[in-house]
Image (cartoon, rainbow, N blue to C red; front, side):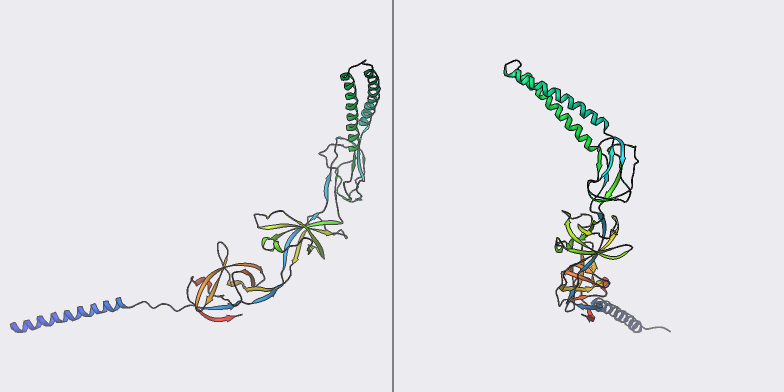
Length: 355
């Protein structure tokens, strides 16, 4: 069957028109796709907490150490052989009690010899004084005789001092420790005879965090307990270190304890309880509202659907709440849930609000 020219022309026109229609549709689809905007996800739902003030009892617990008020090792001041030893272990002694004696026979003989020399020298000095009056000797010769007399007196004082050092006495009242030598032993200033410490009074040392140092008062009373002892003791603050400890930003505090029952031993670990006046306007927030940062801490502040990260300073804490000392005001609303997914200056929807 043969097609005429008009039929062929008609078929070509239909094909071209169809192609034009298809191309136009594809272009419109691309244009519609280009004009379409992405749909933003809805703001996250979070819980909030309204800030209010409360009365906070500011009692803190700190570790401490009991130390001796007075304690020392007993050393001889000179070398020699012990001729007497009265250092019974565990014995209570008074200040000045004779604990040991070093042989001093040689020193006493030396003192006697010097005394005889001094007597002869003083008689010579008297003769020279009479001769000086009649110009029998010169002033210089007389002065030399007097100088020799004075030197002998000085030597005698040194020997007397050494004789006193042969007596080893208790430097203060206290309890003797373990005896380290026996009678007849040769001792030197490096030898430990025994130890002594004061028992009726001890010291309590503890470190106080920097944020509480301004509130500590001289004479303030603290309470503490020790391991294995149910009794609560009282200590009176007597001094603090002159500066902060750089490694932990805390202040060393020293207090004095009356130890009448003698149950507090130096070196014992202590749990120190320190109380401050209650704060009636303290701000406490849930612990989970704190966002830790490399330097400091933050909370997320809510305001009409918008959020803002603000820095805060914290104080005391318990099992579920932490005190905010700077950065928040009563009436502020903070976010307590979904904190990890929030971005600065974002938007949120409050689900539940607590106060």
